Length: 278
Image (cartoon, rainbow, N blue to C red; front, side):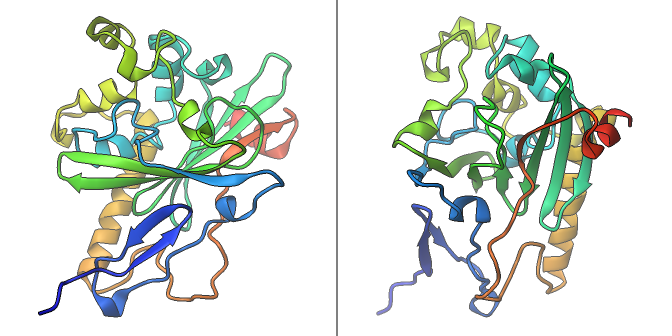
């Protein structure tokens, strides 16, 4: 008698299982943002779905959350104006935005002009197949991304998020959860959930699986469309026997690097000029 099993590896405080064909098993990647620690920093893992805007098991299709990553305009609208300031006031500034394909997914590049004339230059990435590379929305400092979130589909209508990030004290990751009306999501009354909606209400409120045929996409949804097209190309590649983006079979490959982060630029900086004048 033999009990079937899947090979597992531990990394960043999380356990990863490979569930595909043995001959196609890739190398479990490392990520430079979690490899390079400053003195006093440590890696903390969290399984409570930080980034969901609510509970641990989210009762809707995972793409309703994942497509939110390249939706740059939901931040000032939902998190800045619609429900009041949920992060910091500067995130409520409507940014200039552009989207680009990266080697592993879709980058969202935004620029916000601050009161002192400097530019908050922010890069967010959706890295396939399920990685959310989102810099700290509280903008506590201007650095590269400090945590990664793995959006894990459970079935067609449920998912959860696992996060690993750099901290100085345990519990720091959970302390960064957004607050609506000064409260954590779980502490809101039903009336407050209605009056101060966040990501959970916006995404779960679409139903278990939203129908794309009911959508009315605009130019601000360019990143969402790019991500959908990229995902479809990967499905076609795998169906044809190929390897999707982000897969490596080289154990000596360097850690995966992301551009994602919060940065501060002078308004005359070439990157800022290019984006603001577009």
